[in-house]
Image (cartoon, chains in turn brown, orange):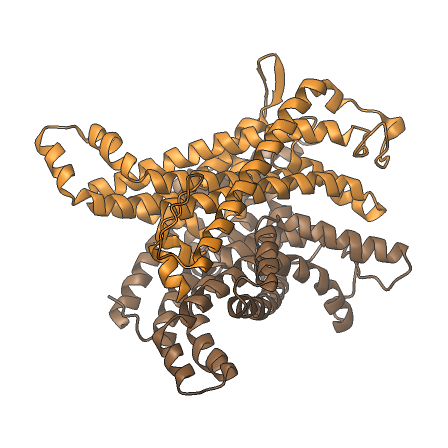
Length: 319
Length: 318
C-alpha cells in the first residue's frame, strides 16, 4: 500500500516537473508584459531595458526557470507585474471563493444526480426514465456559458423587468462580508454549473445502479423478503455510488475550467477570473502561479481518488 | 438481469437489426431506441449541414458582415429573422457563416488531434521502454492542466501576431488557424491513452510477430496492422471529439481568444451577447446557443450510437 503511494507520488512529481517546464515556456513566450508601454512616448528604450532588467526578463530562460522554480518550492510565486503584489497573496485571496463555488456545486450536483439516477434506474424505460435520459443528453451538450447566460437572462434581467424578486447578475459591486448577499450572488453561478454537471453524473448513477440491481446479492436480499426500500438504499446504492468517487475526483479539472467561464460571466471574484484577467495582460507570474496551483491540485486529486477508492471498495487491490 | 443479456448483444449502427429468437422484447425495444437516438442525431446533423450549405448560397459573407448602426440591437423581425447584434449585423446571416467556421474549425482540429493521439499512443506502446514512459508522463502532464487553462495559455502563445489569410478569395482572420492548432494540440490525450492500451495488447499477437519476421518495417506494421485494428476507438473518438472541438471553439471564442470578428463564429457571437443580455437582448444569446447545443447534441448522439456499435461491452457504461 505505502509502496504504491510512494511510487505514485514519485511519478506525480515527475509529471509536475514536466508541467512546470511546459507552462513556463508557454507563458514566457506568450506575450511581452512590456508591450503595453510601447505606445507610451515618455518611455525611452533605456527605460524599457531598465524594467526588463528589474523584472529579470533579460536573463537566459533556463536561469529564469530555475530561479522561479526554486522560489516556488519555497512558496514564493513572485510578484505580479501590474498589481505589484505577491502572487501567492493574490491567489490566497481568491481561492476561497472558487472553492466555495466548486464545493457547493459538487454537493448539489451529486445529490441531484443520485436522486435522478436512482429514479430512472428503478423505473427503467418508463416515461420518467426517458424524460430524465433525454434531459441528461441535452444537459451533456450544453456549454457552461449557455446555462450561465440563460439563467442570467431569465432570473436577473427578465424577472427584474416583470417586477418579480430577481437575483443579482454579479456585475454590481457587492458587499462580500454580508452572508446574505454572498449566498444571493452564489445562486446563479452554482445553478449554471449544476445544470451542466448533473447530466453526466445522473447517467452514470443510472448505469451503475442498473448494473448493481442485476447482481445476485441484490436478488438474495429481495428473496430474504426485505422491503424494496432497504434493498435499494442499504444494499444496492452503497455499491452503485462507489464509482462516483472516481468521477468526482477526475472532474476537478473540468470544474476549474468551468469556473473561468462562470466566474467571468458573473464577475465572481475567484481564481478562474484572476487567471483570465491576468492572462490577457501577459502578467506571467500570476498566470504561472495559478497554473501551478491548479495542476498540482489535479495531480494530487488523481492520487487521492485512486487511494480513496481502495478504502471504500476493498475488492480493488493495488499492485 | 436485462443489462447482462444486453451486454452480449451487438447492435450494429445503421444496419439491419438481427432479431434473435431468444432476445427478450425489452431488449429489442432497447436496441430500437438506441438506433432511433443515433438515427435522430444523424438526421439532425444532416439538416444542420444542409442549412449551412444552402444558407451560404443565398446569403453571402459580405451580408453577414454588413454593419448597420441604424438597425443595431433590433429584435427579430421580417427583415432580420433573428434580430441584429450590437453593430447591426444580421444574426441569421452570421449564424450561417459562423456555422461554417465552427464546423471547419471542429473538423480540422479533430483531424489534428486524432493524428497526434494515434501516433503518440501508438509509438509509446509499440516502442515501450523509456519512450513509453516519457510520452505517457507528457500525456499525463497535458491532462493535468485543466483544458480551458491550457487553451488560454496556448491561445495567447500562438496568437501573438495574427495575420489575415486569404483562401479561395475569402479573407479569414488568422485566428481561425490558431484556434484549430490550439484545440488540436490540447485534445489528443485521451485517444493517445486508448490507442496505447490497444496497441499494447495487439503488439503481443502472433500476426504482428509474423509480419516482423517477414521483414515488414515499423511504419508498415504501424499503419497496415496496428492502426486498422484500433479503428473502432479512433472513429468513436473522432466523432465525440468533433463535438468537443466545436464546444471548445465556442469556449475560446466566447472568452475572446478565439475567432476574431468580423469573421463570425457561434462562440464569438455569444461574447457580445454577454454584455447586452443585461439590457434584455435575448435574441443575441438564444440563436447562437440553440445552434451550438443542437449541433453538439446531434454529434454526441451519433457518437454514442457508434460507440455501442463498435464496442458492445460499452452498453453497460452508457
